[in-house]
Figure (cartoon, rainbow, N blue to C red):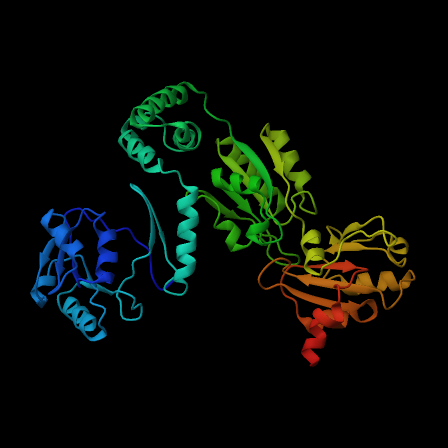
Length: 462
């Protein structure tokens, strides 16, 4: 992050702008929305700037500025649309100890002004650090369309009501009150009187309401791509007081949790550092008993190889309520990544979800059934067990050329795909050096693999 976004107080501050043409006009239309005093320096200013000066909206100085004119200013804008003149303005500002922005010159500016969605007092700043102004404008247009024009009115009335709302205890009950206002009654309000009346009614309702009990949501976070997170999962993260998450949860998904939420990493790694399951159960119960809304965030789908039953049993034993939010499991994301389906008419009418190892070591299965031609299985946690899996399948009659596809980091930007025959799978997997979460698809190859998705081993040898 080269530019850190901040909101500067404009009350009692002075901003200096040098220029009087189109660039100056565009910047002034934005700055006039602030409470700052505006000093404009320009030998020839546009008629609109003269009108603003006559109406007392800014002070116009029909001359070039001196360094002393910048002293005491909060910000300076160089907007003469002349490289040499704007550079001189920036130098003067620097000499006076003031940050300067040269309009449309990111490299030489001490700060930048983002695209802004204005629902005063609600403002949203959108910046791309100059990399994609078109994208910033598109995001702004999308937000302008989504946000009600009355949002500013609701926020202004709500701000004046904050002292009254302090009658509710800090934390969950107060957040529930404001959530009820902004997302429940608020959007139906037409004017300021209606907003005030709604706030008073809601406050009375929430003051009389019983304290909300703690609750646990077991949430499937999907394979890693935040766009594959379900709407229910996003809502759970948005309201969580505590998020207890696994090692495989991506940072992009964790970013979706409330900033105020307590984040607890209970990552488990096979044959590596782990948080004991008993400790995880205790954490879930402890926070729920304290009245927190807890999200137990699990990679993929919480019901697939996630030790979910043990955590539910702990909640039941403690009298803690819970519900499950299903997610997209790694098998679904992996098979989508290779353009195939888990079942196909005249090939396989069933698919198995297997684990490569369990609490006792390598996991045993019905290998004779799995070794039959056209069987399909999704094998979780199989990297370290690959030689064991290969040996069991070959021992029970699997064809050496049985296709196996291994997908690492399915659905993520760093996804990789390895396609290999069963007879060379351990060697090919070792050569690929996968170090992320990976899933094996027994009996499936990527669609049009030879043309579109050569194996990682083939790429390495090329």
